[in-house]
Image (cartoon, rainbow, N blue to C red; front, side):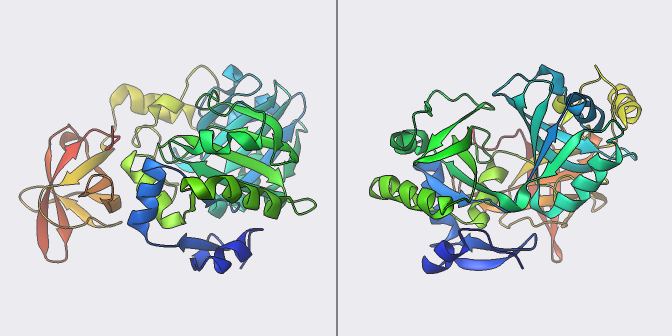
Length: 362
C-alpha cells in the first residue's frame, strides 16, 4: 500500500486511516458530520495526492485529447480547465477527468481518478498514434484541496496569485508558501468553493506547504478533512463518483453528462451517444430524497409502488447539511421526472422516496 507525502501528518493527528485505491488514506479525523460542516461553513484541507496526473505534450496533444474525450478541449485557453470523460468503445465511461490547458494546442495536464491511473494511461496510450509525448507524473505530484467559503481568503497570505478572483475552472501557476511552480486551481469537488494546489515534493515542499497552511489557517478554524466527508460533500452537489454513479457500463447521456458530450468533433462512441440523444435513453441517473425514514446505500434496489424493480441506488447518505437522507440512482426513464414516487428496498421493507432536482443543496 502506498503512502502520500502527508501520511505521517495524518497519523500524527490521529486520523482514522484505511486503504483507498492502493493508498493509505485518511477517512476521518473528528467525525464525518463535523468535518463536512467545517468545509460547508468555513474551510478544510483534503489530501488528494492519490489522484493521477498525466502531461501530454506536442503538436498532436490536443488532437489526441479530442479523440479520447467527450468534451471539446479546443475551447480551452491557457489557464482554463474542463471537466470531461473518456468514453469506451461500447458507449460506457472509462473514467471522468479534468483537462488543464498549460500551453495552448501543445501542453495539457489530465487529472484522473486514483483507482484508474493505469487503466486510463493504457487507454489513452492505445490512441496515441501520432507520437504525443506522454508523462505519468502521478507518483511525484502532491495535491491538496483546500475547500470551503473562507479557503481563498485564509490562504491569500501564502501567495501573490489572487485567490479570491480565481474563477471556477481556471488556474494559475505561481509561488505558494515559498514553493515555486505550484499550480493553483479552482476546480473543487465539494461545491463549497476553494482551491486545489499541485506541486512536486522537492526539498521538503510537502511539509513546508502543509505546515504553512495550518499556521495561517489554524487560528481561523481551518481543519484537516478525511475522504468520508469529501464523499458526503460531493453527493449533496449531485457530483458523480466513478465506480459508483458512472462506470464502464453507463453512458454520459444516461448519467446526465450530455453537457460534456460535444458532437462538434470525432471521438470514441460518438455515434452511439448521438443515437441516444436522438432516441432518448431507457434509464437515467436521478437524485432522490427519502420520504420514509432510512438511508439508501450503494446497490440497493429501487422499485415502483407494485414492487417491480425499476433501478438501483448508486450513492446514498444522510446529508449533514440538510439533515435528511439523499441518494443518486438509475431508474427507468418513466420514473425520472421530478417528484416521481419511487421506493428503496431496505432489507425486507420498501421505503418511499421522491425524485428531486440536483444539486440537493442550492
